[in-house]
Length: 97
Image (tube, rainbow, N blue to C red; front, side, top):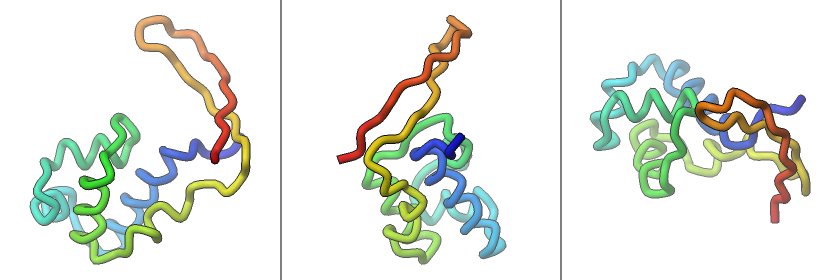
């Protein structure tokens, strides 16, 4: 199964941060966010707003388009959704326009 579109962005952020030998606190401080929020973004526990994603890209000295590059160009992509507390896996189709 393909990597989830949005989680790919978090993975890319973590990869870039580690390549640059930066820790969560350093990037978070430069971004004006908490290390906890950055960790949740990297591990796809929350979705960053565009301004927050931009601040992180500036802190990493990485163009925003490089961070979102993993987002698929496929028209349709399947992803899995697990509803909190229900524990059931539900597959959905997302149409990227």
